[in-house]
Image (cartoon, rainbow, N blue to C red):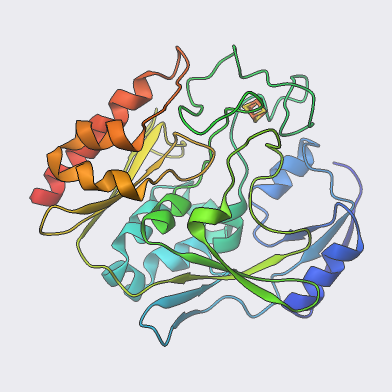
Length: 316
Ligand code: SF4
């Protein structure tokens, strides 16, 4: 690990100002992804700003009837919250499908949104990776790509977003709240929060330099049957090959977001009108324009079968 300096922030705006002051500085909370990346020297921040002391660890009702989840709420606490279990079961199920109990005890809501890809070449510093080192190339293209993206990718990067939580939040239309060094706040719809790789795969979110996530807001409950189905190579502690987050209403209409297929949680609202025609028609519409590799073409069929299974479960 490279040497770094450390400070504790006294307020969200002070934390943002501290990061803005030093190029390359990073916030740290749970550290469940960042510390691993620092040990591998994939991330080498010269300075860490610890945000754990900020009072951002509460879940509060909003005047609109939704919930405001503080950025520091741990994944375990969020999944177990009675209001989340009752009104946003999709989110609770997605959280419990991710990582391990120990990791969920440490990992935060904001950190989960910001976790980085698990592309194997991103973690191998001997290999070319545009995300780790812009302009160096992409060893995954033409390489081992079974886990990687089938849609929304580019000539520069075919990585996937690893978060389960973010897929559920995309289906629930969450909004990410931030503060910057001047104390100015922003509300970013989750649909716009994660970016597609384009020719700058190192830029993964809409956050501006120094901007700190303070909370994630959920709109009022949408009801329906809420199901998160994750398909992976082993039963626990593995990332999704494909996941389906679905909210299915009694009339058969549904919201559907996919994980494991793109650089961001993948939802195409216009395609959801195909759901009553069946899972195959819906996935054909949701993944219209997919360009899988030879190794991961199975994901398109797997997504259709997983959605089919989810719709059957919703029908009881
Ligand atoms: Fe790097 Fe993206 Fe290529 Fe993986 S797919 S090697 S993360 S540029």
